[in-house]
Image 1 (spheres, rainbow, N blue to C red):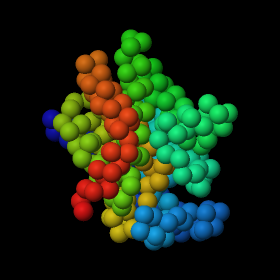
Image 2 (image 1 turned 60 degrees about the vertical axis):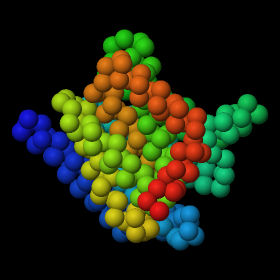
Image 3 (image 1 turned 30 degrees about the vertical axis):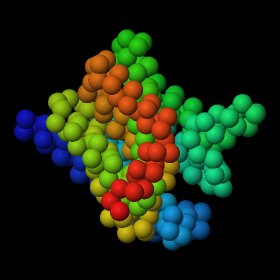
Length: 254
């Protein structure tokens, strides 16, 4: 018990330190110029995107210490999100249906690239952590679905990071690598939450998808088939009700 608490605490603190260091470094360096990193939030205020890559890098590094394959998948999810942050900045289409409809018309949107990229990353986690084909598929759904869910609630300052903290906390009670993976996601989210709430920064697709993928990997590591199936059903339902989920996040906490 004491060893588990120590491991989880170390994972959380390390991820928080890495995310905070990354956020500070990116603000100081602003690679490519400050304007490249600026966006308008829902209230029309200018915020930066530094929290996204800072959290993605911290989550990838932290989860790689627990399981290298998970670290690579988290990095892949963050990279797909970063591509959408850049290439899809002017695209108002949201949700699977819009991007798949565009694909049927012969247009490959940044959202489509993100969808298939993160799905592939989820399946890679399933292949690394599970032995049976069905379990691997369910694991892929959970990882991709969790990444999408965190992005769905990233509609107001602090919502996504707070969701990561709330959803990750129960995972800390489990034994095994799932708890450490959840701790990593929580540490990275906690490190940027104050700046997110203060509307100085935002996670963007980069941070939301990376943290969500880490949460999904924690679920995969800590559950058997029944648990995976239950989480997969819930996440698919959330994706199908995407706009309602986002609206609920907008209304929460005022």
